[in-house]
Image (cartoon, rainbow, N blue to C red):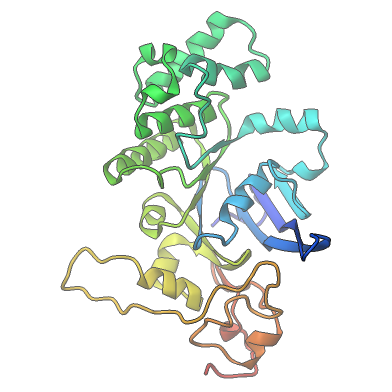
Length: 334
């Protein structure tokens, strides 16, 4: 864990991202979908933070909010100590040189009308590299780095497999030599054998270029392979955050315990007790007043329905948002 005086590369403070939704017979009633509902975390330079949770919990929206692709409703995103929300469009574009994204779907994230050279040249042109020969040298060097043939620069995206397309997407993210990569489910759309290749590539690139990752995924086994720290989200809120191995060996939040119980065990002799949840995920249009997980939690008690838990520090680099660990809980699990 970094020392308290060390400035994190990324510092997210009480981030909220709400979307307006019209409903009713004449679509005049406006409600808010609380996709991200007040989360905070930090990422130190050189580390990898995994952001996990089931589909619809707000992981991808968080990544887009950090990069300002979706304007946050409230909260601060400090990158290298500077609040991105307060920057002009021109200053934000300059800052994005150090913050790039790798998207989930390598089929839709690449423009089919452009060659690989054109795709990789776009960010270079946007950031002032006007000489074509200079751009081509950088493109060829980056194709070498991600394990693609230089001749691929003259081909179109539809001519490649999913794994090759994702390598092109990674090359596009890296070509400006950024400090932070936000990887949004980068292997979810790939075959298992290709997933391993891309994950190993990401690890190698992190060492070579001293990269920092925010790695968004729903696959906990993948996250364990790649991350130093883990953040668990549920219904737009943070449930637990800390050292990856600590959370895997001692999950504290009942939701984290449920997620880990669902990971397949390779050895059939080692049995893991599966936790089966009852009930449905609450609506982000009208989230619960108290704990978002209270309606499905096997350890719920009265306070959980009334008061939203804050992140409690349990020990060095391990925090959990659960009343079970609050000395003032005033109740026993049911």
